[in-house]
Picture 1 (cartoon, rainbow, N blue to C red):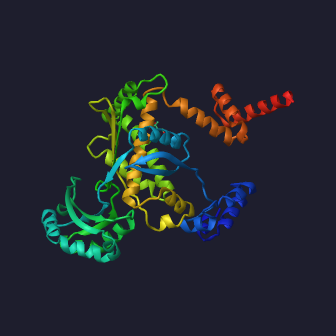
Picture 2 (cartoon, rainbow, N blue to C red):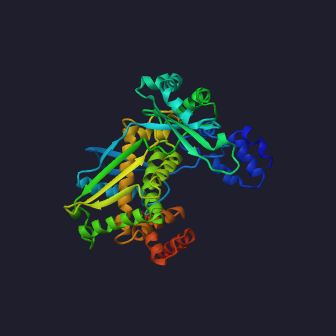
Picture 3 (cartoon, protein in one colour):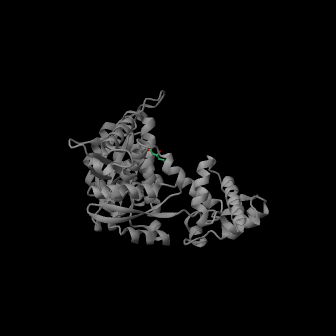
Length: 436
Ligand code: MEV
């Protein structure tokens, strides 16, 4: 297949090419061409390159969330069963305890400039700091609208990082890293920061006598944090045969496990990101930036640790806190471009990026509690399996009125597979015929 032609073809031509090459069937080609959904193939084709279709994901609403005294409906887009249900279930428990409290720092992101070969790195650092105002003015001149919106470049920091690779020329034995701190208000910030970093690079070279190589924002957004906190009296957490005290103690021990062991912390944080990514995706945000930032932040103390921690206060209540670097925006082309994302912003009724960051933190904290509560009591498989079985039954083409029956039999069979669901459905239909 001559893939070099691919970028210049239309979507239909690309699909046709795949059919002609025998990579997909004509029927599969039709499925791809019919996959535009609300976005539409034309818009998708304008968003990225070499488009051959649109991959749709479900959007569910996280319900029962009370954040800073306000009711919120939280759109979440994700393929994994249980996430939306668990978030909503926990939000209902937390609401009984007064809801989530959340706040955030100013929306400050960092642009990095890598300066190589500065002859005197320490002197270059001092010189850069002396000319800070000039650097900030140069950066702000590149984004005047940002200053009008109350943001802009606000500070410069410089680090000298020793490089001990053998055989380096003396002037390369230290890397000079310049950080431009930018308050990016309601933008995610990548474009703003990258433009500023590229724009001030010549001035930095002039001041340092070095050569600027990389000019790019850092995804370790440790100056742009959202925080959320909950306090839940033990009795609210009791369920089935588990007392509230038992649940509190289980969650606290589970949290401690993540504090002590990076292997557990990775899974603990994965559970948090289940919700954070789902909200990022539903709101048109770059969930890879969010992921990278969250994990880098979790490792900042030297050992990878949990983003959310749970303790018991003197009255026996469960207290949970999360601090999350957030790299999200509520303005920008990526949000305007997708018609469904625009509707989801309306449902979320998001005020600004700080508000959205706080929602991410609350959703992540709630999701974490849902996982720890289940894991430290009956285990996650009970709830997970029934939802998984329903999803498998639906994928197998089981009609909605038979999904519950098939799901139950799938769990009993211990073979939660599409073929098994089809087999069970055939048996049920056979039994129906016999009854008639
Ligand atoms: C699964 O998607 C997420 C969990 O593994 C999170 C956790 O273990 O805390 C359940």
